[in-house]
Image 1 (cartoon, rainbow, N blue to C red):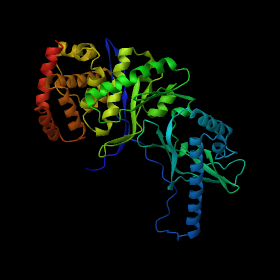
Image 2: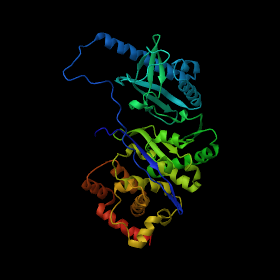
Image 3: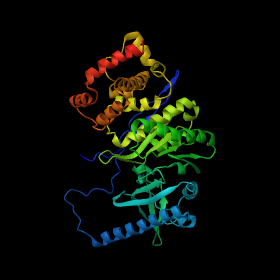
Image 4: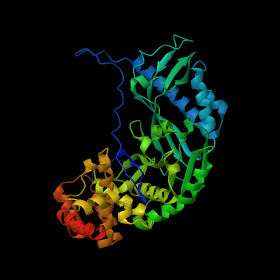
Amino acid sequence: MANRARAWLSAAVAVLALAGIVVISLPAAPAQPRAQAGQGQPMGAVPPPSESVDTADAQRATAVTDLLRRRAAAMLDRDEAAFTATLDPNADPAFLDEQRALFANLGDIPLDTWSYGLRADDTLDVASLPAPAADPTAELWAPSVDLRYALRGIDQTPTSRPMGYLFAKRAGVWYLRSDTALNDLGRRSWRGPWDFGPCVVTPTAHGLVLAHRGSQPMVDRLVRELDSSVEAVSEVWGDAWPKRVAMILPDSLPEMRALVGPDFPVESVVAVAIADRVDTARHTATGQRVVLSPTGARALSLSSLRVVLRHEITHVAARAETVDGSPMWLLEGFADYVGYRDSGVTLAQGAPDLARRVRDSGPPTALPDDREFRARDRSLDLAYQQAWSIARFVADRFGEARLVALYRAVAGAGPISASDTDDLLRQVIGMDRRGLLQAWQGYLRTTLR
């Protein structure tokens, strides 16, 4: 099987609606391509190889790699003096203050790994950047740098995040000068919770809650629900997943946006399940986090919060088995099924729009299309309510184990043809899409009459 590694995002958008909530998950937009280094040569102009240039590049890469190694070691050893020694003393004072705060904010984070990877062959042309005022002759360099880190007890494999670092050489010594100077060149530094304030970590048997000071009441709610939510998901999905979940509670919407992506509608979400990289061929996922809204999550009742957490943890559990491009009605319907399971919320209570439609004009005439899950109006709620009702129908008619088998078969196949989808449906539940539609319609007429 071809390597299916990719980064993607799913989000839970909770909308208070009568007796329940509607939980929505959407894939992230594709990552923007990296800016490319250097300028092209006119066609036919090929400069001769230069051993001195190659040697200089190698020396520069070696020196900056050593700088990053010392920076990482200082962070893990909690050696602030060694950490600040890697910073350009003539850098913007605001940058130096932010770096000192970053070091302090990471003090309580349980880290197994904190390191950097440098790719000297992916270097930006920094000729347009202003020269350091204190030393106009200082040499600047902007190679590609990735931060690699792992939370202890959570990340089995370190996750990787891009950092837009600019380095400066003065008096023969290389320093880190800025992590924002390359923004206009298309290379930005990822921001973690520790970039926004001191972090407080509360461990549980099945994970941890990472928040900031002053959030203890909400942290206590999350801590009480995390382990039971993991166990509830495992009752359906099984134990073949790490069963370790990191929940992050930001203090502000800008912080949440930094964690989940600049284009995501953070104003309307209450929880987001993210992953940095997923490889379904190897059944691995790195950097999985459940990010809570700083405002929306606090407004949820206990029962609504429980549904949201179990929905999102279902995405965490199933992520490594889920191929991008799988039918959204299955992905989100399954997560909602697990979220609402044992909640006591009936289909009519949790799917009021669908219930109204069935009463007024009859059941839907087709399975929800993926495009419906990208709508911006009430039809979006209807799409998710339909997806949940399909999952409930399969579980009620064929049993919960068959619903899980259907998810693994279809979501594990990814984007496939309609005929292949029909084949998988027949193999698992004995009916194709047309048969599923007709049986589901009958279920809705009986259940929502």
